[in-house]
Image (tube, rainbow, N blue to C red; front, side, top):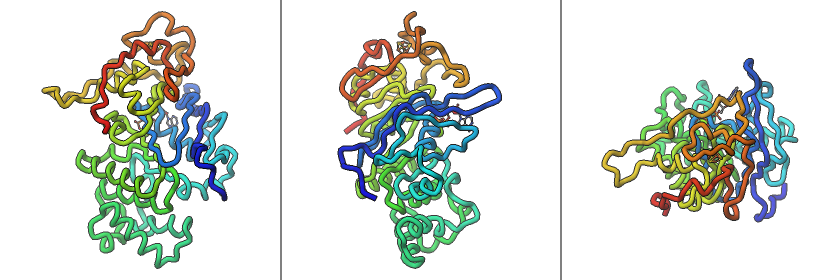
Length: 339
Ligand SMILES: Nc1ncnc2c1ncn2[C@@H]1O[C@H](COP(=O)(O)OP(=O)(O)OP(=O)(O)O)[C@@H](O)[C@H]1O
Ligand code: SF4
Ligand SMILES: [Mg+2]
């Protein structure tokens, strides 16, 4: 297969909507999400729990069973290929080889009854045509590379014999084995303690620099996104409410929700490093609001905010918001966390 020209984004998502059929009605977990990922770049996706980040990653990889999920999109294309039109064998061939995913919980990708080494060898055999012997050697090298101490001695062990941090490293090794062009990293560090979180993030960024792969890095932590992403998308209640370069959004947030997330980053100068949160709760996704879904929590809302769902508007080239009043998300932040 020919690679797409370098100026065409690797991944293009336009108006992606994911609905789940539920007894109480339909849950709209992703609502007209549009984004693009270019070769080699990192797109950070940030948002509170339940905002639809994992559903977005799974929808891109077509991993959501239907029913209950229904996926529609104007475009869902990888290297110009329509992912919605691919049959299951073509999707299986693409997963891992072109687009790989590191899941929130490593046990989602690891089989508890298979030795770790077999699971890291599989993509090497399947997608890169390695012999058994070569795949074993390469898998041990990968496990070593992701920081598994005594990889050759421990690689024949089973998942239950490894710690959470080791399993997350093994799932990164599996994801990297076929040298994918795009890695979807869904909160790869959330389940781990803070020192391991930093190590795993540094490892992902190192691997990205070495291989040139693009990455969608999902997190609920603006600090993590600031350290690692070129551009970012802020999700709220299934919608991408702001997108732009990380620097632009940090320096001039154009949506009050983004500003709330920025305010929640603990400041080094604060005596008490207390994590502030945004008051209120996200809406029930089965009950669509008539106006802006952030309005009940928005400190700068006005009457017109409930008049219809806001449409995307550009505040600068490549910087869009779903807020009717972007000027109210006043720029209060400096790019402290970004190099
Ligand atoms: N299989 C499913 N059936 C019905 N609803 C679902 C299903 N999977 C996800 N949802 C709903 O979709 C919404 C978005 O879920 P998602 O897992 O994408 O959130 P998230 O942003 O990844 O949250 P977190 O930060 O906790 O991982 C939630 O309201 C969730 O309950
Ligand atoms: S549209 Fe109105 S309610 Fe929604 S975020 Fe903007 S100011 Fe707040
Ligand atoms: Mg999630």
